[in-house]
Image 1 (cartoon, helix red, strand yellow):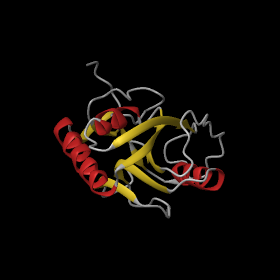
Image 2 (cartoon, rainbow, N blue to C red):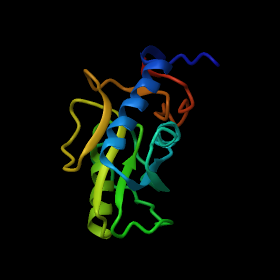
Image 3 (spheres, one colour):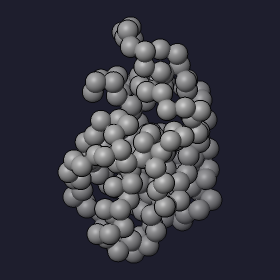
Length: 172
């Protein structure tokens, strides 16, 4: 893979990522018999692809987007959700790579809760950062980071690039 000058120390290597995916899948498998999983695109695509293959319950899949700058607590960009799958009366799991500041994820959960008659709403992410905002829905995650350093890879971008790195590293 091309050497990127901004890619620093690896925080989660490929093995740790897959262990985290397995851990989140186990948590979800204990809680659900069926659900609609809604991927936050583009960041949640890689985690969703790995995660759903380890789920032992029936799922339907959809997607939602809300373009933002990572770490932006005051994201006011448009939420785009076409509701390709009917979520009325369903368990909904919103899947993304991470909760960094939490501002965008909070808006997405409020949007789904306020506009759709869903049975339950949960979040599945690989990791969370410590200074995230409170989001009052169940959250299933594998790792809690020690700090709020800027990260890149496995869905996380740096200047809209490098989401495809198979690991997560610090940005330098």
